[in-house]
Structure formats: structure tokens, C-alpha cells
Image (cartoon, rainbow, N blue to C red; front, side, top):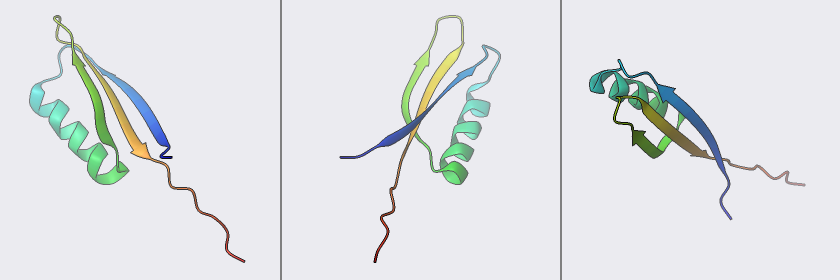
Length: 61
């Protein structure tokens, strides 16, 4: 079974589409996060849920 680590972010309503894209691209590239959900509210706020897979390492004898 896969395990996921999640991170929830909120972007203020003044955030441009390009700034949001740039931020999410950096998170994906350097933090290995992927976009799970994005919600755009009528007032312009963005609610973002990111996730990344948790890799468990088992000890070998």
C-alpha cells in the first residue's frame, strides 16, 4: 500500500496565475511534490494540496 505525505497551502487573492505556477513548479522540482488538489475560490484565493510518496527503507541483514 502506498503512503503519502501531504502539505496544504493557501495563496492570497493577489497571487497571479504565473506566480502560483512558478511556486508549484519549484515545489515539484526541488521538493518532489505533486499537485493533489487545487481549489480556486470566487474571491481569488487558491487552496492547494500537495502530496509526495513516502519511501520506507528496510534494513538488510
